[in-house]
Length: 337
Image 1 (cartoon, helix red, strand yellow):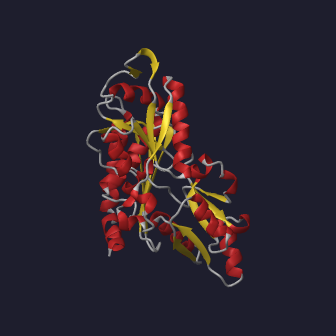
Image 2: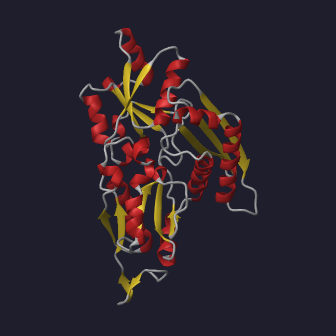
Image 3: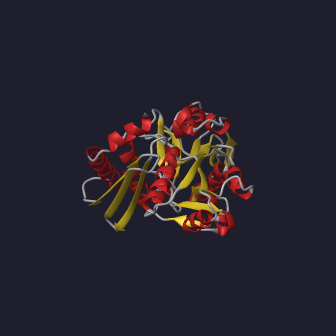
């Protein structure tokens, strides 16, 4: 397209079919389908889903061993740069923080629920589960593929003088919830947004609020990416952009980038609006065993003269600097050893 209007050569009345690249998982297809419908609504152009398999979808290794969340993104970005698709939809928390050459983040739609969710046996909450199993002499086995979730679950248990066993798992939502249904695990922790988008929010037994478990940077948000030179398409996609969400996730991702941390690091961040022009950012860095969690927050008004996104990024960088001064680099070094 290279900056041309969203029309075919036949003339402006012909609606060009746009090719949307998506991973093949049920969640990715659900998310991409939502975006496709919205793109058609705001631009009038039909959208065709193009399924692309990423290395992260085929490998069963832990994410930290195969390069982090970027393994879910690179194949889609290659397809974009090669012109096989026109735009792509990602879970924003999967996007590496480095800006890619030749691509642009055209839109960040309004964020879904950013919280993590517990899906536990017998409909139990985390407190109820741990207490019930402790009464029978057992430690609750909770599955997650995230060091961030492990760190905060273990810290929660230590604070209460109890214990949980965090079990590293991979797989799609069906696979993970299946571990609970089969009795192999007592609970799993998943993103609320993903369950909601799949129509499975009713299976959540407890929403884990930020006081208990801070989410991953960008969790609950989607990213719509296109080629940098496709200005006509980018303009159309920008109609789906939600400014408050974009600013919030910009702060979270700036913190993550400044800490030079990927998905394998136990780093969490959440930015929320304390008012129409006041952004509140909380960050957590810890050790996977939960022995140490470093938690800090910062807030700032969005002063005139800069874009909200730029100011949000500055807030993220400032909080990351404080975390590093407070010992975050040492904690992440302990994780790496």
